[in-house]
Length: 151
Figure 1 (cartoon, rainbow, N blue to C red):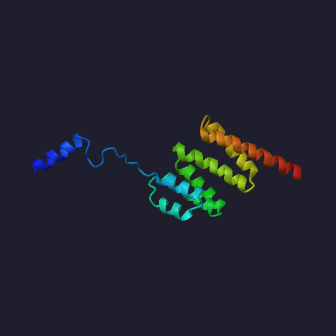
Figure 2: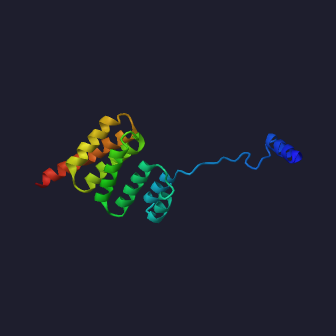
Figure 3: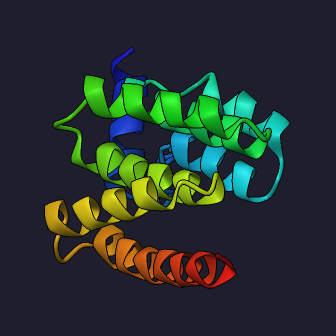
């Protein structure tokens, strides 16, 4: 018994352990699901979804799946639930607000999209999400101008 322990100790010290030089990278199942949605692979997204442990991430991924399945109203409801239940989760709340603004725009709800995007700019100043909200507001402005011209 002592010999085995001694040999294992020597291997580890010498860098000969089986895990030496290998990096174990944990899987981010939420990101894997979002990547699958982006690639239009909803079955893979649903498979990754089952392994997500963070409840806010689960709601966000569910909303993205609903949007990908052509159910924007359901997606908005799930995003609203996330924002209400996890208001202090900066990561998921911010991107949920942005996703909501994009869905409002997609549904032709220009005022709601504009108000939401402006709120994102104010609440998340200096972040990537705020920059995306600024770009979204430009698209909203163009859509509003086109709608005014059509009248």
